[in-house]
Length: 334
Image 1 (cartoon, helix red, strand yellow):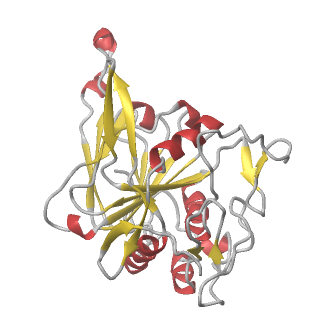
Image 2: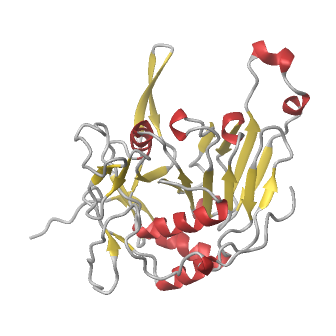
Image 3: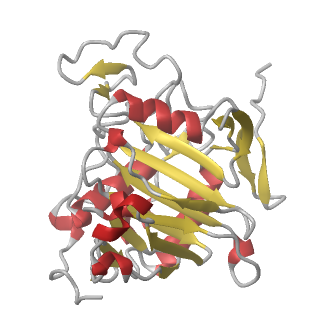
């Protein structure tokens, strides 16, 4: 692990942490609810509006990063920037509560076919997603326009999903993350791990729709969970030509705490796998939120992210009284 990458920059040099003007990828918000002074982001694809970040959180985020990022690039094909933390502990804990309270989530189910056999997959965590690939963008009214012409997209452009803009509370995080990771993002995926049984198996974000050497920024909130990484196995036919640096690559374990950020970039996704394994005891049952930012280049990325993070399942929302995720039911107006 190498020293800090650069002298800390003050976020207010880049933008002021006040209620934002129209962000580039979310529409003009509706203002709803009993507190008419509190703005919300709303869209026809949202089951309910999502409130803006409160002023105290916006002010706290102005001090990001809490500590300088450290390079981890001492193994073959590995290029990581690790902030411990990126967001201060107090602000991260408040942000965890805010995100869990106000977002809508899904418990996605889907089927895959391997070797001619169809298997039902039940996603072992709660997921949600916002964003749109580089071929299109959201207009201020929430409609979708072609990136090149700014004309309305064809109704058949996204036949399998209904893309939705990133709400202000997550878009502020995206803007801050872009500054300090020196990358741009158009998608935000959010995972909620309710307890130690929720997990994600070894995988890599190496889909072709992300382009070459993609940057994936991952922010952790809530309970500390182990983040495991290992080099991808080398195909047998290539064993005779494998550099010693790959053969000697060692697994990596990062104990991600609330407020930490990991940026995986360069050749990392093409050559390394990562996972959040199941855990018992410790903080694991307190709940953890993971927010990842990434950039999809083509419409296939949009369809993929909505299929595997929204699907056709029911909406879930945090119930503060019962301290658990529960199925959300829309209130019927009289």
